[in-house]
Structure formats: C-alpha cells, structure tokens
Image 1 (tube, helix red, strand yellow):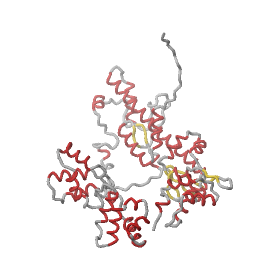
Image 2 (cartoon, rainbow, N blue to C red):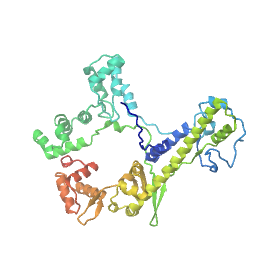
Image 3 (cartoon, rainbow, N blue to C red):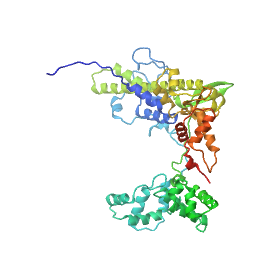
Image 4 (cartoon, rainbow, N blue to C red):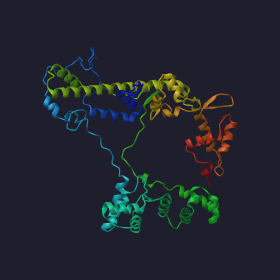
Length: 483
C-alpha cells in the first residue's frame, strides 16, 4: 500500500546577485575592464559616468528625480521604433556618431607571427600541387612552441578524408624535411631530440665539438637528459674538457623554437589591484582606480519606465516593453551593487593582510613574513575562507619593494628549536641559498639539505624539503649536476 508523506527540508542556494558578485570578486583588475564593457554592451540601461542624480525616496527603485532634465517626462516615446530597433546606439557601438573620436585607436607596431613567417618561407619552395597541399597540412599541424606532435599516419588520414589527397608517410617525410630547413632552426621537429639535432646541423660542421654534440644527442640522448655524463665519457672515451664544451653548446640551443617569433604584437603588463605606499612610517592602502569604475543607471531608461507607468496598460506590446525595461534596470542596479561590494571586500581583505604582515610591508625584509593562512584573514574580516581565497587568487599589490601576488603572503608555519613559528617562505629562501651555493659536481641531496636545515634550528622533514624544492622548481640533485 502506497503512502503519501510530506517532508520539509532546508536548502541553501545562491541568488543570481550572489553568483554575479562571486564571479566579479575572483577576476583580476586586468579582466575587470573587459567584463564591464561586456555588461555595457548587453545592457543599455547601464552607462559609464558618475551618478549625478539623487537616490529614490519611495519604494520604487526606478522612480527617481533628477537635478537636470534632458527630456520632459511628458514627451511621447516612439514605441514602435523602440521595439523594432535591435541595434541600440549604446556604449561605443559602431555607427554611433557621438563616439567617433573615442573609437579611434592608436596605431600599433605589427609583428610577424610564427605562422606568417613559415608561410612566407613555404612560398619559395618548388613543389607539385599535391606536395603543396601536404606542406600546408604539415604547417597547420605545427603547435605554438614549434613542434609537430601528431603522428605522420594521423596526418596522412586527414589528407585523405579532408583534402582527398592520398599519400603515405614516406612522401610526408620528404615534404617535412623541406619545412624543417625553415627558420627558426628546429622548427617542425617531432621530439626534443630531433629539434636539437636540427639546430646542431645548422652550425659549423667542421667544428669537432659540433659533430661530437650531434653524436651524443643521436646516440646517447637518454643518458644526456639524465645527466649520466660519466657513462657518456666511458662509451665515447672523451676528456672532461671535451664533454664540457659539448654540454655548453647543447645547453645554448632553443628547446622551444616556436617561441622566438612574436605572437600577438602587443606586450602584456601586470596591473596591480592595490597600491601600498609608506608615508613616514604610516602605510596607506588604495585600490587601483580601474577597480572603481564610474557606472550609473541610464537616465533615459528610468524616464522611459516612468512614462510607460503613467500610460495605459492595455497594450500587450507596451506591457512587454515595460517588463523588458524593468529587467534591464534591475540587472544594471545589481551589477553596480556587485562592483561596489567587490571594492569593499577587496579593501577589507587587503587591509587585514597589511596589518597581519605589517613588519614586512614596512621594511620589505622577507624574514619578517609571519606564517599566515586563509583562515587567519577570514577570521579577522569575519568572512568565509572561500571569499578570502577568491580575493587572493590572481590579485597583486604594488609596494615600494615591487609587485607581489597576494598568494605570496600566505604560507604555513615551521617550528624552530626555540619554539617560535616562522614562515615557510623564510625556509624556502634558506633552501634556495643552500642549493645556490652547493658544489656543482656534487649537489646536495634532500637528506643532506634536511640535516643542514635542522642544524640551523628548523624542524623540518625530508619530504617537506622535497615539497619545498619542487615548489621552487628546483630539480633533484642528480639533475642539478654540472661540469
């Protein structure tokens, strides 16, 4: 027998406004301009500029009185024209004469991309029509770092299915060998080993060290990559000096030949989210002006809604228009509120970080950094840890000692023999110094580094040493060996 039952459950869900705030909070300053421009383009009720009218005093958030009137509230609006025109002459859109001067961009120096350079060189090859199709397919398979990682058989299949050209791997190799003569040297290689050999073959073939380098990469690439130099010396019966000369030649080669060409033609700059200045021992924190854009509700849209509300409500098209206008005004107001809330949250969080790490920001001495985790700041500002994490992610602060990502100031604590907690950042700096001053022929192992740190009073395990070394992008001792 079936029974009907009624259960009451409590669920926590985020509102659309909260979701919008979270998304805005986690993006850095460099991306905020783009996000605001997107919102200005899709929402004609949102405008750039300072809010020059008073806040509404009644319950209707859009029934507002303005200091200046650009149009009488009793003016008739061309409803048919408004509904029929999908291309709003809004924020910096093409065809809006008011922004003709603002839309003019300053000229940028053009730079040749890797693909442009390869296509230009490809034009000088004397190839048959079929070989030209094959060559274009190969060039299109070159990735941004200059390598072809697709198998030759996969490219043969692509040519058969998409181009109707039936060939085999042998013919493909012939065209590929022509492309591998292009600049930059090493382009269109399929492996690092092939890339290095291609570059070495461009050098002086009468130099015995060049020939020896080609032989080592050809026959002993695995031993060379693992720095088993003693095995190479025994197999080839070469001196320490010869091996040193060869290693010096090989290490100067470019492992990513595609990176030598300009990609975009414009430089990327790091834009700090906060600016911290030291004014006579008093730290002053300001938010980057790009984080505080001037946005306002469109006056014409607010007037439009007021005019529609005073008119008759019998027209179906009119009702749909009123609904649309209200939705756009609501969205604009929510977006402005989310931007303001973002500014307040950023400042609260950064102020707490500055107070916590006051000694470091005052002197710039990394040894003054205190152990600090996300929960410490979340407790101070009375917010969730996830909120602090979103603020710390992809944000940076400009100080008198340089620009630092906010994540730099968060670190675990390491206990010392004296019972104090020091930042893991301090331990990493000491670890980096120890490795930097180690003997090149006999690098320090993680066990030796652990003992040296323990001797200095830092209670740290070998696995923690290995973790910090990996975070510093330092390879194991065997791979740090140098001649």
